[in-house]
Image 1: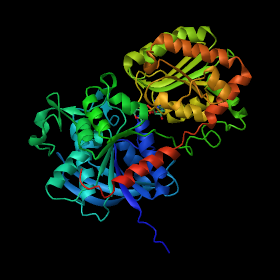
Image 2: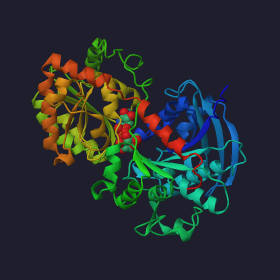
Image 3: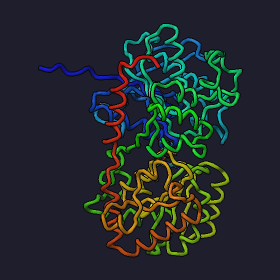
Image 4: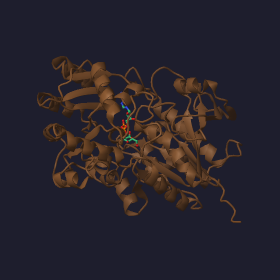
Length: 508
Ligand code: ADP
Ligand code: GLC
């Protein structure tokens, strides 16, 4: 009998993980990947900070103390481990968690990164602490028997893990390989040189090929330089990162790793057990085969937003309200869209100026535009289910998940052709419609000489309004959107291939 290979272990270090704590797509990906990798023999433990909302959700879960750190950058901390059973999307084995309980860093009011609209002033300390603890777990510095074969770190908040591991390797420790996933290069974890000592970072590594970034320290850059491999969340974004337009100053680092074959784009998937209109408890159920329930969801959503039905398409937006997401373009294109019979329902939070512009829009067009500010997970499900369109006019988009949820729920995406949006939506050209491959509408493809602007968005929305009037064509488009694979299948296999290839690769 062929012996079964040992289950391989990955430690995933991140600042968010659904369903515990979420401000955006990072949480969905960190929460969904473990179940996607498990069938291929990779078992994941996720290390996250014990923010108050995390502790609250885990209050009923048995958590075992793994390590007391002693002083961790200004106070005592404990690492606990437990399995969150029946976590949506965690598969049958549950979500295997390690939480960093450091009250002086994480037990405070506000969200993971901000309080009252301002960054926590010590974010660099908080997430350097998370990264340092991740590195200790990886090298057995905690005394715990569990050791990962590989460490997967996400974004700037975990960006220092590969650096700490590099210093540990130089001191003689055996360290596992690391994969750093860049979910968004715009957030770089920048702080002053005077903090190096406090954060256990050596001044000798403060130079342009390591920690240094324009005279400051960048944890994102550190990770991109020191990780064994770098990934980002779509193939198009991987290429874009190597350009000044999208690289946010780190294009040189990205280009170098890309050229050496050490950086790839692996598209995000979505957890199709959580995001399934046939079983979603938040909605009237429907499926690609029987879409009738969607009419009830649409009617309910219109009522919830107080919008009378014009008979035109109901477009939804579920988004952080930031410049990245092109919400100003939406404000500019909305009057034309509503004049053509469209209706718009927006759920979002973020930039106060954009919030105000959107609420002003709703006040000006009360019978065709509705806006809810704030964060509401259940409402987001009702919006994808009730929407005919989901609009994502991002200036850049590493992957984007809302267009994937939209496809799964038959809210046909209208997207800017950038990053992952470009890779996941097939524009409804006459040819693609005829071939049955169209899944949405896209505009502004820079590679074709386009720009992401309000005119392009307005034109794409106009095309959607026109096609919506042809019921048969619309249902065909919606069905092909709903049946397009958006699960983790192919992408999980790509992570597995990457991880398998690195095991045994040694120190970063
Ligand atoms: P990003 O991570 O850049 O914000 P993504 O499209 O990858 O963009 O992921 C956004 C995630 O956050 C999706 O799951 C979306 O449904 C969710 N989301 C964004 N804003 C809100 C909100 N105000 N309320 C509920 N969910 C939201
Ligand atoms: C980031 C990106 C988004 C991506 C998400 C998950 O927040 O902005 O495009 O989908 O991470 O990878």
